[in-house]
Length: 563
Image 1 (tube, rainbow, N blue to C red):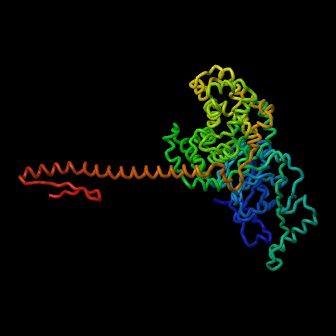
Image 2: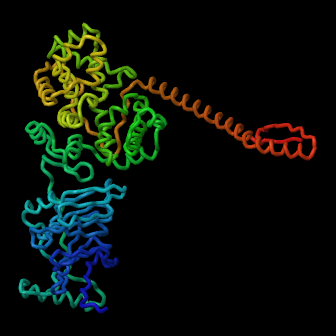
Image 3: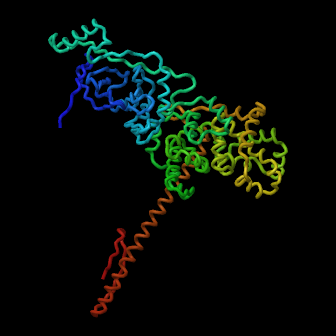
């Protein structure tokens, strides 16, 4: 095998002379005219494969010490010139470069969500990246390509040329020739050259409409999302998970979440499959891990009996991304459920009073009917709230309701509870017994969820400020970045007492099972020896001997035969 040609080695500037490039990442454009190489220096070298000359060198921004992978996503719109280049550095961040202006457009991944390898789809629409934590991330490259048309004047100009050509002025050509002579040793080992790599500038600051969340994902403009939601009634199912993550501003604290997961299954949920059986074993394990992480985060969530039913719909939706599941649940519990545990283990009386006040203002006749039949807010509001409407709505209706709930302040959740009751005004007026009310609150007739949502928005605008739920709950407070906030808004002495009692019961069960195993071992030893004893007895009787055995079990569970 013979090689056709070799590419000239790149000269290095003085600051990089001590280290060899050691190229380990290569990529060629789709038309095969340009090759880019990177290695153990923060430099990219570009060769023209038609003239076999070194064209340019680009110096990556600060923080990049090594290039691990280069990606040219295929396009059909640029004729195969591959104007977009992805550079994966040692810090796990994939930086995107515009090959025409040599401008840093944006970056994918972060130090918390480091990427180890990436590959683009054959059509160039999507990018699949494997993070160092083992998760697979899918990105849409078209969002990155839009920035190419937005880039204005190039940040840098073409720097290093392989040889003089017509575009280089004569005086500049003479300077390049003299520089080559000096570089080849004319100055007794003095390394000097006109090598000036193109220095990439950081991307322009983002406008107020977007910002970085969850390892590089864009947070969408909430005002525009609400406008879309009111126009269509719900978010697109394809983008619903991404929109929810953006609305809740999930931080993506991988290190903090990993420390919670390392503690293993919490003792409160060790037997979750018996208390809350689920047909899918995989979904059951995800639910158990999510509940255990919440219990390790705050002790109150180990003592909340209704928590599995509350979090299950969210876990089922985000079961493929457990970090997002935990952070969504933590955001929900610290905002929508922040006052739920003030009267633990009793229901939140203050929030139930808010729902009752809203019902009294907007539908006093229905409230009077419920009171006359001894139906309090513990019966008509708390079952709906503690199960987050999952028992009264179908899956599509539930998703639509939570599209609106996450797009509004936390108090909107209480307005939806009151709205669901007022929207069933005529049905509830025909309920006269306790059984009728129980049947409705757990298995209601078909509901028009659109009417429920419109009624909740009407209540939001017409409820007096003194009884408005937003007065008590306020606005959304996202989770902090880096580490999760402390959640201690509960009566600590009651939770500690419940924890001690649960631990005491657990130890008693372990002691009982241990004693049962010991007794079972004694019985098994007797059952194994008795057949042998019968055979031995028959042999003694057959030989005319006298046999009088004594059976004894010693402390080491061994059966002794004394003759």
